[in-house]
Length: 238
Image (cartoon, rainbow, N blue to C red; front, side, top):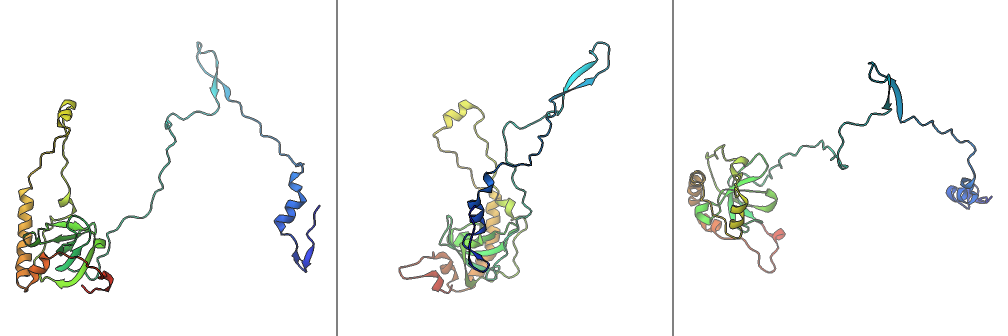
């Protein structure tokens, strides 16, 4: 039996775990063994009625479940948090000119109209000035400038929401033969809906009128944003 001699009063040479390992008491046989539980029989005999049923019958002790999954499927953990729309930055108000940093129109300057229920920003070029239509953008991918367009009392129609931008479901080939012959061919381009074109013109009418009131603002919206060598966006004032 290894003893842990004291190096100083209350301080042993070995730690408690080292001393217990050196003593090796875990190698000894356990004297107090619990009796093994009696195994329950797999079947039990029950009495059944009826002259032709034999009187007794063997029934499983534990009844198997009626339905069970073919494979073990991990159940996802239920989250208690519900997604909420992002809070609008204080530098973004209706009429603010934004610079897009990602997407098809990155580098373009657009006019902010309103925030949708999903938290995305509704913006327009206007389309007549720089070719950017009504779009939804994430405020994480825009730079808010100090330039603002005075939209006055003009408001965006309530029907311009997230569902307005949902893509219609397209039906594929009805048969395998038609699908075989369609393979490799370019898909037919669907015409732009007239209703959305009318909505774009109606919204841009008020924005273009406000832009034309300010000198050189149309040229500013038409110009694309870019950085040259030695320019750093965090050192700029937009």
